Length: 202
Image (cartoon, rainbow, N blue to C red; front, top):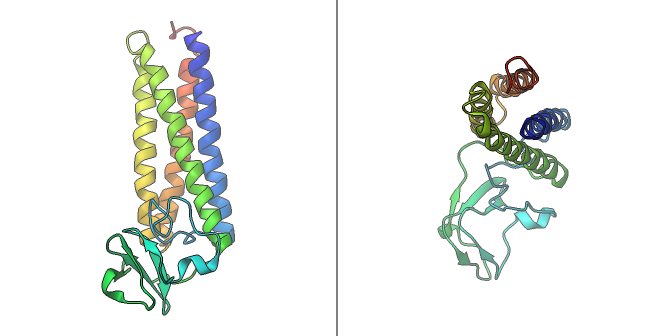
């Protein structure tokens, strides 16, 4: 039963990572890579804006630290939690200088946000796979070792994603990001083959 459950977790992990690659390709094709100019949140929100007016300064509005606004063709980040008055004051804001991207598109934002959600789901799937693999730490130590490698690679991939965003989509960083995703798929395939080897698996 444990063997079957582990194989299922490996297959689910493969599918989830493959979906991340597909989502990333769609983001690239639609030019939505900067749909969320910050990371890991999106404009400082857990759930990104759904309307263009949401990224502009609003009077009598409670902003939280890290939330972003688009003001005079620049992004600004809230320095702390505060409530605005009737007119804008930049005393509570800091210009976002990590990159010079200064556009907003609801479509691009949600393409990128969904891409990140799928990535987070894939990370969770690989963590579950690692947890199941620990049952074979004595009988088949290669399985938890490879599963751990996948999880660590997913963490590194998430860090690479941040570097891609912070660099305003530098081509070579995008290439490394994609190559890493393909490498993770290769490790998962090898992991499945190892679990399917009846001569070695007990």
